[in-house]
Length: 426
Image 1 (tube, rainbow, N blue to C red):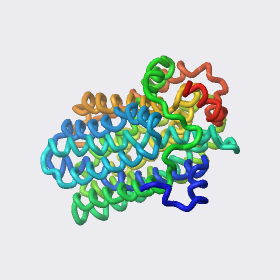
Image 2 (cartoon, helix red, strand yellow):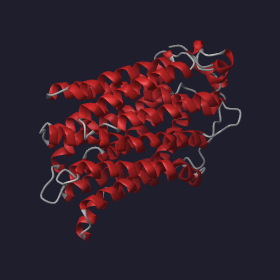
Image 3 (cartoon, rainbow, N blue to C red):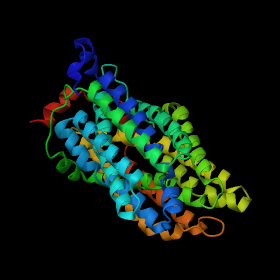
């Protein structure tokens, strides 16, 4: 469906940077609603409903994340070449297929294929969203900062993540298939939104082929992407380690829904104030600080166990602390991609950043999975210690890598896209 069906005035509005930015922000909310209605309960479905071991569950989750995050660089490169609208429509179509198959699949191979399809769908539309926000900040006459746009992206998107688990928890009373079909319907609706509201090719956004080569040649960015991958690995424990900790709880599904709801509520309400509080802090301060808070979150569950706290309360508290660290680190890191990329097109850079994260999740889940097998009192303390060590080490590496960035311009939109485009399309 084309936006040429819209009246001329609405077509003109759709082409403005601000309109494209808010379309992406709204789309993220719908995408999160469909995603979080299913994924928070996937571990319980695979382990409880299908009887899979913790290692096999970890592989399924890792395949989904690796297919999405690992192939982000492909999606980002294609977004540079074909524009965000085409990639968004293709990604939504794959998500529809993936969630339907996930609901009807009754064996391990089917679940793996479904996980890969849902991940691949995200690999197509997510980097297109992020590169669009990067360009919007550079095109806006008001000069709204990139950190501010990514804070909006996170805060509004988390409204979907807040409602999604509640919707999924209610529908689980019917069946897991019902949850998956509702999610598929939401991604179908998202495709219609993108088809109507996004221009086929935004002004000042030239089509660039082979942009991934530019990203791979940027050694400083590659080091940043490798260290930043610890963020996605740690955030992934919301879907892996924390549900495993709750697996023996009599109300595991309800507590899991509450955990995701509170984490999302914290981000939805506090993300923009936190980003304003960070302000123009140097990258070498803001991003490592967020990683250290995420590392601390991995120690909340074993600490709560030592203090005699109920397991459900400890897991929920850990999720909230994890969300706090995520709020500090992520908008600043995503905004910094434009500075690390220089005048190169940003799609492949955002894609490669997530690709490194996907590889970290797949490798990390496979390697650490055996340490997370629940014992009598939940996930063993050594498993939580390893999970805390990963973001802590990444924080140190990022501090060393970014220590020369005393005043980075990632908070603002310093380049006009027109100037950048002349260098991107020689």
